[in-house]
Image 1 (tube, one colour):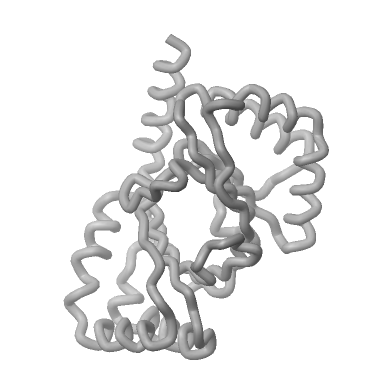
Image 2: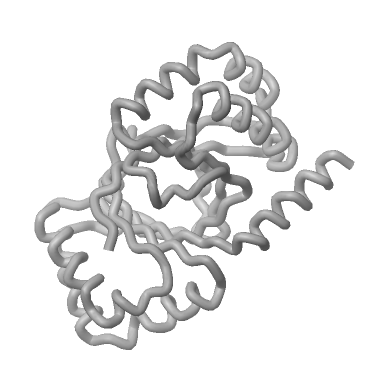
Length: 227
């Protein structure tokens, strides 16, 4: 019964906020050209008409991951997402700029993601810590993760965003969910990781989810630009 309640809460949360974030990850080999071309694309009529946030992030300490940058588009509802998807191929200028981006970067992956649970808006965070995890029992994991997160946010006085999300399209065979935790700068983010890993509550939480959660990768996303 508890698992059913948690699942219902997650579905209700997603349905209430109806937030979707499309991640386009690249391995950039010419950063200046990539950023310049992306900025031109966002300044077209197509870019200005996107009904959502548009951001560029840079990956740091991405382990063996190939991606160095991620372009994120986040939408509040399905209609805005649909308009974005339908409008992309209608502008020749945008198509040409997309080809130019291809000259400066290699495309790595794309996914459409949604939050299962979160606190606060990550659009205000300059640095975001990411954990990619493989979860075999999402309801049980969420029932442990949510109270643990709330307790640690209060204990560490975190007012940035924090949440649990998952890809609903473009699933990755290596991970099923991701956790994020925002910060104002790199120094704050790193200090929080040290506090988190040394806190006895983290050891207690890890014991709770032992056997249903595997940490695949951890990295930092640094906000380069909002368009």
